[in-house]
Image (cartoon, rainbow, N blue to C red; front, side):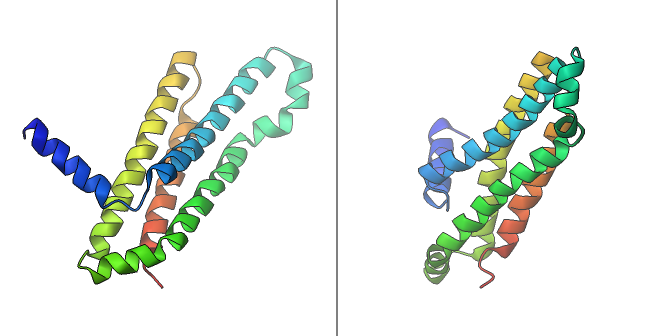
Length: 158
């Protein structure tokens, strides 16, 4: 495929997207925030391992770090719900002019998963560089992917 054909395909995809540049930026910041929280807790765990005072002080947070990260990820779920609720009229109008709901959902899923994948890849690279475990990142990726699929499933349900 030639460069101009690829460029035209990407510009067509971006034109038809539900996500606007501001929404992409906000969603990317939320994903990065979730992964940074996981990185921060891994860093705190490493620093606390050498100090009994820090270990006792952060004991609750370190034993429940996945719960903290997954709890913060609910903010991304709320953002997805808010985005779809605010774009309900746009979705109905697109369906009225001939766009298919399945294609709208598919473009939404692809764009959100691409953004999530980029953020996750950067976070995993950072964790590997610093020598942290990547299990929390993979768990967070799975949960955020489920949020994306669930929100796409609810798209146009009203």
